Structures are given as C-alpha cells and as structure tokens.
Amino acid sequence: MIFSSYIYILFFLPIIFIGYFALSRIKNSDLQLLWLLAASLFFYSWWDIKYLPILLASIFINFQLGKLLSRLSRKKKLVLFIGIGFNLLILLYFKHFDFFIENYNDLFLQKINSLNLIIPLGISFFTFQQIAFLVDVYSNKTSDYKFLHYATYVSFFPQLIAGPIVHHKDLMPQFDDLSKRKINIRNITLGLFIFSIGLFKKVVIADSLAGFVSSGHSSEIILSSIEAWALSLSYTLQLYFDFSGYADMAIGSALLINIRLPINFNSPYKAINIQEFWRRWHMTLSHFLRDYIYIPLGGNRLSNIIKYRNVLFTFLLGGIWHGAGWTFIFWGGLHGFALIILNLWQKIGWKIPMVLSWFITFNFINIAWIFFRADDFNAAIKILSAMFGFTPKPIPIDYIDSISMLIGIPLLSYVSEFSTNAIFPSHLLLYLLILIPFVLFADNVNKTYQTSTISYAKLIIGGLAFSISIIFLGMSSSQVFLYYNF
Image 1 (cartoon, helix red, strand yellow):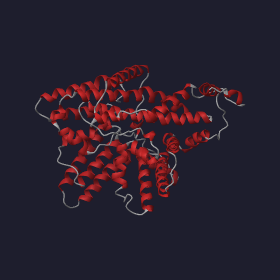
Image 2 (image 1 turned 45 degrees about the vertical axis):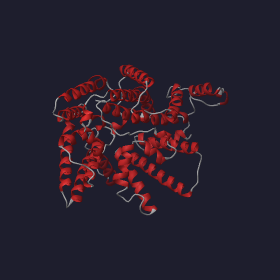
Image 3 (image 1 turned 30 degrees about the horizontal axis):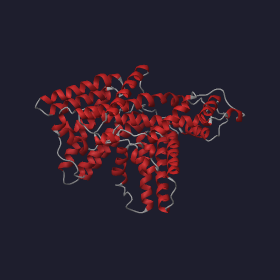
Image 4 (image 1 turned 180 degrees about the vertical axis):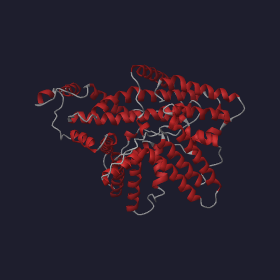
C-alpha cells in the first residue's frame, strides 16, 4: 500500500482516523495506541505479509535490549555493540548479501549462486531508527516506556517505509499526551492541505517524469547531448518531487491524528553549497549520520586529516545505506569529496558570487544523481559522455524548433546536422524549464506546518491539488515511491 493510491486515500486513512478518535471515548488510553499499532502492521503487511515477522522480531529484540541497557550499570557498552551488530546484520543480510556474493565471485573467480533476496520494505529505516534508540538508551536520553508504546513508535505507518528517521524522544511523548487523543480541526485542515500538496507533487509531477527517465536509461538508446541533459534533469526533478511528495504526505497523514513528525525535506535545490544541500535533503538521515557515525568517529575535534577521513567514511556509509552497488558507494564518495573540497575552499577564504555557487552546486548534484540512478558504471558513463558531447548523435530537429520558439531565433538555419528521431517529446524541454524555477523560488509547506496557520487561499489550492491528483490517479497507476527501494 502506498500513500498515492485509492486504497490508502479513500479507505485506509479514513478508517484509521474514525477508529482512532472513536476509541478516545473509552477510558482505556492504550486502546488508541493498540489501534495504531494494528493499523501500522496491517499497512506493512499489505506489501507482503511474509516479511511481517522480521519487523516484529526486530521490534521485540530491540525492545528487550533497550530494557536491558536501561537497567545495567556494567557491560552496557557490550550490550550496545550486540544490539547495533544485530540490527546491522539484518540489514546487511537482506540488502547487501547478494552484492557481497557477486563481488566475491568476481574477485576469486567463483560461481556461488546469489540468494536473490527481496529487500523487506522499510528495513533501512526501521533498523536505523532502532539503532538510534539503543544509543539514546545507552546515553540515558530516554525515559520509561512500555512495549505497546515502543512497537507503535517503530511501526507508526506514516514514517515506517521511508522515514523520517524519528527519535524516541520526539515521538513517544506525543503518544503519551492525552490531549492529542481528541479531534483537532486545525490539525485536520492543515494535515489535509499538506497531504494534498504532497499527493500532487507525487502523482502529477514525479510520476509524469518517470516514463521519460525509464525510457532514457534503456541500454539500447543513443542519446544526443540535449537529450542526455534532459534525462539527467528529469531524474533530478523526479527524485525531488517524489521524495518531497512522500515527506509531505507522511507529515499530513500523521497530523490528522495530532502527531507531528519532524521536517525531512526543505527545498534542497536552493542550496548554495553541498553542505547546505545535506542540511535540506533527507534531513533526519543527515542528522543520524552526523550524530551516530561522524561525531563518534571524532567529528572535527581532531586534525584536519582525521576530520576529512571521517567525512569521507560517513558518506561512503551513506551511499551503502542507499543501495547495494558500487554506483551508490561512488555517489556517496562524490558527496564526501565535495564536502572536503568545500571545507578547504572555505579555509582559503576565497568567495564566489552566490549565483555561481548555486550553479556549481546544482550541477554537481545533478551529475552525481546519474550514478545514483544508473544500473552500472557503463550506463552512467554513457549518459555523461552524451551530456558533454562525446557521442555522435546530433540534436533532434523537434528540439531545435522548440528552443527556437522559446528564444525567438530560427536556430535551424544555423544547424548543419540534426536528427529526426527524438527519444523524448519536445514538450519535455518546456516542462523542465517550468519545473526548475518552481523548485528554486516557490515556497514549500514547511512554513505552514511550523506556524500551523493556513489561509483560505491555501485551502482552495489544496482542494484543487487533491482533485487534480485524484483524476490523475484514475488515468494512470501511481509509481512506487523511489525511496521505498532504499
């Protein structure tokens, strides 16, 4: 079940909402949490019920480890390492074991069969969330808790599959707050608005780009330079609106029952350097990598060489977390090196104009995404070669005509060689030119979410966004969120 589906929007979410507040009339406060837990486990099982025992076992074992950590005065560090090792082993087995077998075969010329494991949905998120929980218990940052509360915290359906990675201290007090167990019209209105905007981003924008991205990554296609740039920008924008849409729908879904999730996405393509990008993109993952990997390694407290080692190591792990493949590791390494270069540049004290800084940052991110999306290095190099003019295919005539109309100059008279077989329709160029300024200058819903105020104009915009999205859902099936794969 995905947020952008009729079953979730028209059946699951309304039933959860009605049941949750209907149970508020009963004095037993645990019934509402039990309802949320049952709903979350049903939500998870909808994808494939055979992976539910993995989630349940992970929750139970981590809860017991947390209880043990809170009671121990000695050997706490050993228990913490056991807990972290347990979570990492689950993650490595399902997500990376076949990758290890493949590389072992290549390195030692063996022919061990892959297990062809299917990655359990959301495993990267609920394992990281529980690792953070164990570390917080070890550091005495948590208070007393019950199994029902903990199980609901881990499996809470709006954030279970693709985040945000929520800290125990951010969510558990909200479950205990009885004032949040009653209907709040402002939160319902705000939640529906944010959810509708996210639904529009996903269904109308991100999914409309998905076909172009898939066709452009076909191994049989030869791209012209402009087609390669259109392809890279299409994926850059698809990922933006897909993840941004998910983040909005997660926040909106939780807000309907008065639960506030942390902001996880804050217009990252507005960033003027790579450090600011990671403060805006997948914010809770960035915080996790900083707090639980970078800082424990020493952070920036030691020499510059150690600091740069820590940065690179942290981002290599971030790449591995996203996927089992050398392209993901390389993508993480690219971002690590970019942060090191930025730090060195800042130490020199040279400054460049803000617009140029943004331009460099955006293009670096756009190029790095190519490795993130490509099936292998050959596919990535093929796209990069086309982008920078190292392939012989000329620009399609449809694109020349479209650009001529935009700038008012008959470019065709200046072009001696062109192609007649365009891979993408020419209106894709116009679509991209509209979307890029939108992500750079349009406000996001974060300010509305933080202030909890919403105007009538926004209500109308939200209603239109929801209506258009529902129509689009009926015209074509919605794509799975890209971060469901990670």
